[in-house]
Image (cartoon, rainbow, N blue to C red; front, side):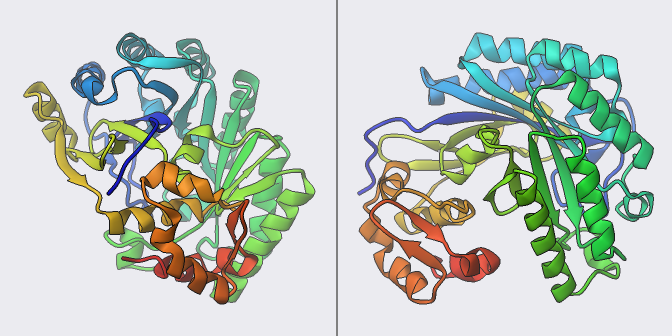
Length: 382
């Protein structure tokens, strides 16, 4: 029987679903802004959604907020300020909460960034992807290399905590070009870097008409070289695709990977909430029009499901084993309500195959386990 003794850490995810142009590799719930965005209406809907959810999280402090998209920086600073003021009025927001906002370099203006900072955003995540104009064009990005550099400069002048998103194994990319992108990013000394291998996701133009990508051996070589360069520059590789200066790990994402709770509001947003005897997954209505209509009717949630005991073990491992340092054994029971013996046989199998190490202090993926993470996770499938 699932039982929880203490409330889990809680985060808030806010989804802004619009973007200027849909990238051919993107499978996120994002929609091209082909006409005026109903910005004020959507901001008010977000707060109604949150207000309707307050009974589920009553009294629990919110430790981090993440504005994701889409492109949240399409919204004016006044709208972000309105949303954050409403959040502070409705929930117990931690005094030192990390408040992250994603931004697209093609929507950057210095005054807007200053406005976001004044509204309370204290961490900016810039979707650079590449500093190479040829690769930016191939990825369908709306910014060029000059805009990418300018956006980073403005971000570093405005925010004390900046993340840069990069992608590698891009169409026609050479190892030298991937390293040039990384060195350009490191030259700005961002506190955090995310380096993602381009993958062809179903239901995307790239999946339907695949571009010519580097082969597996070349991609693996790029990954290894990027990791070595980041380590040489003092960045800690703490999660599969995440690197940070010491003490600058993304608190919001760490909460995901450590299987904490999060409330997701906005079109298509997902959430995970833990009660004394169950763990619930939620999803909001996906399309912005449907979301606005259903929030007005008091029905923002489109799906809700309680996780079974079999689900919980796998979902915990799917997140926690992304962390290079793994997790303390007691965290499994704290976050799933189940004893570690629930996954004992799977742990033994993974350890015998050299994919994890187990001790009284820590359970962590090995180098081999990190390189073949999907193979490792399959062992824990229910």
